[in-house]
Length: 120
Image 1 (cartoon, rainbow, N blue to C red):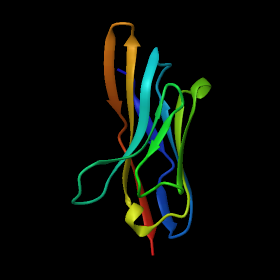
Image 2: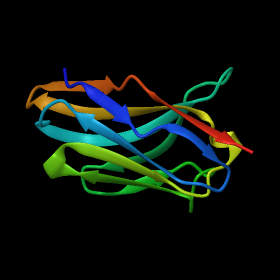
Image 3: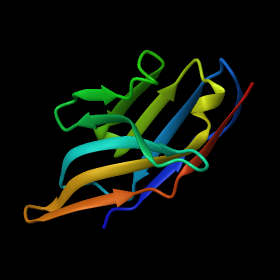
Image 4: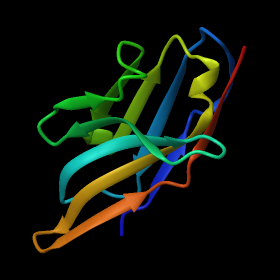
């Protein structure tokens, strides 16, 4: 199974920016989609943004216009640029991959998460 490692989280003031990265441990045979999720204390994990193999993107209403998801296939890395951060964006952010590791094996992988804290 592909390992995903997130980085780039931290503490930032409201209105600031952070860029999250998610690096895959190896090249993936075929990606269906990758995405970012977040989970705040006491809340369920929610989808933040996703990008398909064709490059189509989708965002949660709460982050539209502020967050941008992108992917660098050559580096096997997924990014989330987060601007105009709000205290309600505080959460652990997780990377997810929906992929085929070979023509017959459909798999999902999650990263370990990276903490984002936005102070008011």
